[in-house]
Every structure is written in structure tokens, then in C-alpha cells.
Amino acid sequence: MSAPVTVTDTVAAISTPPGRGGIGIVRLSGPQAASIAMQLVRLRHPLEHAHVRLADVLDSQGDEATRIDEALVTFFAAPNSYTSEDLVEIAAHGSPVVLDLLLRRALELGARLAEPGEFTERAFLSGRLDLTQAEAVRDLIDAQTLTQAHQAASQMGGALSRRVAPVKQALVELIALLEAGIDFAEDDVDVTPEQEIARHIAALASPLAKLEASFSRGRVVHDGLTLAIVGRPNVGKSSLFNRLVERDRAIVTATPGTTRDLVTERISIGGIPIELVDTAGLREGREEAEQLGIARSREALADAALVLVVLDATQPLNDEERRLLTVVEGRPALVAVNKSDLVDPDIAASDSSNSDSKSMDGMPRYSTKCQGTTSEPALSDSRRVPQSLQNESGASAPEENPASQKIPMLPTSALTGDGIPALREKILALATGGAAAEPGMLTNLRQHQAVATALAALADAAKANAGRIPHEMILLDLYRALWALDSLTGQTTPDDILKLIFSTFCIGK
Image 1 (tube, one colour):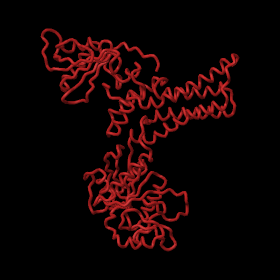
Image 2: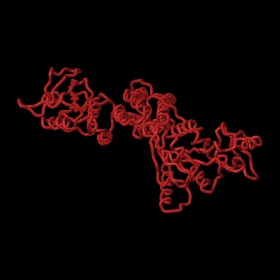
Image 3: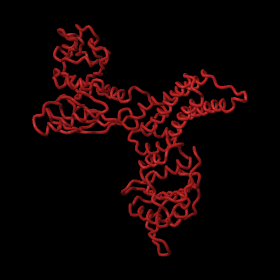
Image 4: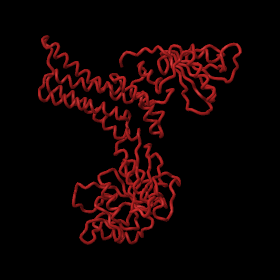
């Protein structure tokens, strides 16, 4: 970390959300924080580092001032505070009038209104936090699931920094080794051989590649994603939506086309925030309102990160469903075969007994028996399922194109709840790409780009080394990798990037 930045002004802000509450907090940070605080309240005892003091909040200054509230005042002396500056927190009752009075008077006494994220920015500039830890502060405040909170807390504790530190140290040592060979070649210092340089670069690239791979899960934990539930009318999309939400959020009737507009709800599956989008049934609209709803359904389908196609186990596929399955082929998608409780298991068992392939676990009514000249699976001799679908046991129809993307298919019943737990597990696996949780994951695009840039620079260095390019040129690539890792933690991050990052924080943090 570069030398700490000295700040000469004092900032103040209300750190609790707007509106009435049990407690409201006004924070001050800077060289005048303590002196201003002592003029805002009447202390019962002198301020002392890390001790809470009872005080009276006065409506004005002077002998005629009247007490309007009691407050608890906590003082943290520099450098042992969140910002590494003198910091005071005044916790009064959460009356907007009282908090506004305290803030206005603090500004009159010489403080400046804090910018969004300025308290955390000062902690970063003073060297108390690196940039990944500062970003984690915002992530913890924004967390909507316990998993997100755990991840943010891990980052705040320096998990990502600790993961990068040994790589960065090894990179610095390699740079020093090559520099020494160049600078002291005339003093009998051996030039590092090509094989040793290659070994060092490979040792650096391996942990960085694993770190880059963590972005696939870290990103979805941090940002969440959208899942669109699509299908033709009356297949049970809204019923499945309600099952996943665990309450009657969408209107369900037996009349096709009940859902006319998008219905959204945010849920958590395995700690991953997922926004479910229930869509209007896809068919040729019979009236203007339904046509508009179908158009929005197609937009939601195009925009969603995941797609859940719902089919009716009691009905054969129609042309619209075939086109839909073709559209989602190659995308992260699942197929839920709903109303599985209505299919006669005896008929399906008869189909399965004649099948050349293994039937779906827990769904014996499905078989992969060929009918006529086609190689598509059959359902009770009435439903024809495209080749792009495969069942949970791994069975699928023979393919004309072996490279065809497979779409997992699960039996469900929105009425009984059968298959819903398995559906949740499949959604989670699809969302995370099967990547396991690990400490120090990359959670945003800025972090990922820094690591990707470092890896690209190391690849260029390895290529230059293999081509026996002079060490001076290899060093340029190695320094580029070092600068990328420095930008990850904020040591070489431009001021405009810092301002952009901290501007996304709430005021008072």
C-alpha cells in the first residue's frame, strides 16, 4: 500500500436510514471531530477513546439552551478508528428532527457533509483497508442473503487479499531475479536460465487461473440472476412460480391466458439471490392485452440468465413448444414436466418395459422407446420430446448431431410439490455452473478484469521466454502483471476509478 493520505477536513453525515427509528447515528471523522462533537452535546463525562459517554442533546448553544434528547457518544482516537482519524458517533433517538439538527449544527461548526462512501474511502486512503476490503463493506450493506453476508464478511477480513499476496510476492521475487541478472551481469551474477523462468511463470499462473475460475460462482452470489419461467398457457407456470416463492404470489386459474403481464419475485436458493419471472403463456394472442403480454414474455426469455421451460405431462408437444425448446438449446436451461401426478404410471411402466434405454429416475412414465422412424423419447405414446432433452438418469434418444446441447428434464407437480426440491437443486447447480464455494472468490467485474489482465501478461511473458526474447522485454510483461495485481487491491488504481467505486456507497459509510 502506498503512503497514507493526510486529510485535513472533518466530515459529518447521518449514518442510519432516513425516517423514524429507535436509534439514529450521526458520525464525524477528521481532526475536528471531537471538538465539534463537544459543542453539539453536553457531555456528562469527558470523552475517552473507545468509551461510551451519556450526553444531552441541546436545541441551541449558550446558557439558555434546552435539552431535547439524550444521546450516547462514542469517541475513537486516531489511528485506532474505522477511518484511522478521530471519529465520533452520536447515537440519539431516531427522530429525523433531532438528527437533522445535530448534522446542521455540525456543518455550522466547520464540518463538511460527507460524500457517499467517504468514511470508507478515508479508511482506504489511510491504509487501514485495501480496495477489495472496502468493496466488501458495501457488499455487506447490500447483502440480501446470509450467503452474501458470509462472503462479504470473508472479503472484509482480507480473504481475497491473502489469496493474492503469495502470488504477488513470488512475482516480485521473479522480477528481482531477472533485474539482478541484467544489472549485475558483469559481476558474475548468473543469468536466469529459460527453464527456470518458465517454471516460475507456470507456478504464478496456476493459482491465478484458479482464482479467475472462482468468478463464475462469486459473481452470481454477489449479483444474483434472473430466471424466466416460460411455456404455453395452462401448463402450470404460475403454480410452479408460487411453489418456488412458497406463497400465492401469482394468480392461478383453470382459464388459459390468465397471466397477462410479467410477475416477478426475488427468492434465495442455496444463498443465491434469484429473481423469478412468471410470464404469459406463449401462443398466438387472441386479444391485444394478451398479445402485449406474450411480447413481454419473449423479451423476458431473451434477457434471462436462466430459463425454466414448463411442459404439461398430459399433453403432446405443440409447434410453439418445439420452437421454444430450439430457442433455449445451448443456453442455461431446465425443463420441468409439470402435472406429473396426473399421468397413469401403469401406462408409462408398460412403455418403459419395451424401452431400449433407462427411464428417468422417479418418473417411470417416461421412456426412450423409438416410435416409427423417429428417435425421440415417448411419453405414454402421446408426447414427443425433442432430442435436446435428456432425463435425470442420463438416458436420451439417439442423436443425429452428437454435439447437440442437452437440456436437463425433471418431473414436477406444482399441486403436490413432488419434484420441487430436486428442481431447486438443479436451478442452483445451473446458476453456479457447478462451481463450489471457496474463500476469497472474485465477486465483481473489476476484480475479474485485474486477474485476467495479470494472467494474460504472464502468458505473454511465457511466450517471450520460450522465444528467447531478451529479459528486458520479459520484464515488461511481468511488470504489467504486477500492476494488474496492484490494481486489484487498490495500490495503483486511478483516482477516477476510486471515485466511481465509492460513489456507489450510501452516505455515512
